[in-house]
Length: 407
Ligand code: ATP
Ligand code: MG
Image (cartoon, rainbow, N blue to C red; front, top):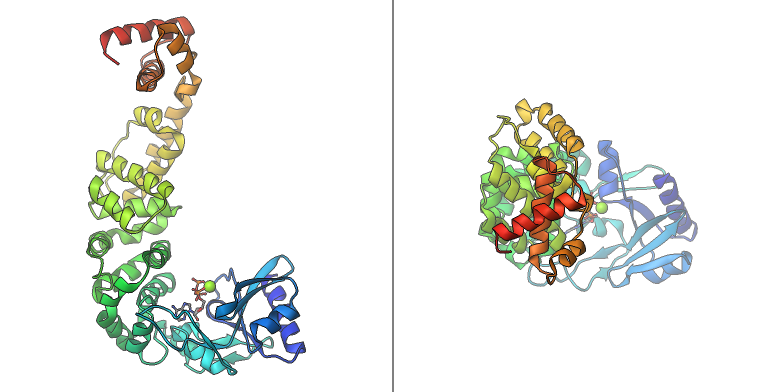
């Protein structure tokens, strides 16, 4: 469906007298038989011409030649053939130059496997022998690798990421250029670095990417990143066992033996969102407290963890534990989590027969942290120690607890 709709876009451009091709990642992934989620199109039509031909469009990046056109339910990026003439301080340029031939457009692309175009009738335009490199499973820079990496210092990291996604090797000279230009990564915005590292740890073969990072010292401009990836390298193969990237980052931190403070530094350096940071800190801390051993399952006392962290976090923790124990993973621990949860007479403070408001009224006290502490105490007593979940019993237990401790 996706490709049929994209073909209609090519057709409309061609019928108006322009050239148009599928280009880049989609061509690579079609040739590899990998799933294609988005299709990029290149053309010799100028952005204004594209916008006229497709009234339903979004001017995504007209300055860079890109217009997103709507075709059926899809949006396709249509980009005018261009050069990236002047590069500034190792970043991609702010200005581009439009050109009239496809080959120049392919020449500005990063790797040979990403520098192929495909016509509507299936003719492959492959001036840099990308198809051969696909067959040989090689990542090779288009043109002279070192100068291409000096133009844009994110490219080496993209190379490591593609190696991890495709389980490819990096061609020797390209690899050497990665090594030589690694220090330039410090000129690249952290958000772009995070994006590539994210794709790398989320890939099918992260260990391949970790090995590239290690051998080329690609992350040497960021010692904390370099050290974390290097220390976790031997366990990187476990990452694909995890379903979410939050769990993957958490396992990475545990595998690198990062303590709580180092985990905080790591997520702050990568400028992760508050939600991501909090989740990763929580899981990393849980792993640090349990200290699970690689491939050696241990029993887990789920009840107190469920009461403190809730079901969702414990489910995530169980997935992390199974990845840590992968070679001898123990489903009985997961079953125990399910059984323990089912057997809990109360599962959260919301299930208690008294609320925070009831406690304030009963003891004529102002709101404060004592309420949360007292509710947590009552939850533990009802869930684990047989205190009946009845208003009178809870208030009586609360009274005794208040007398026993200064809240
Ligand atoms: P995916 O979308 O699966 O991550 P992709 O190859 O489509 O992979 P994109 O980042 O979407 O990667 O870029 C689309 C195309 O644009 C690439 O295939 C490549 O031809 C070109 N490209 C992207 N980033 C760069 C870059 N930094 N330098 C040179 N060319 C690039
Ligand atoms: Mg893409």
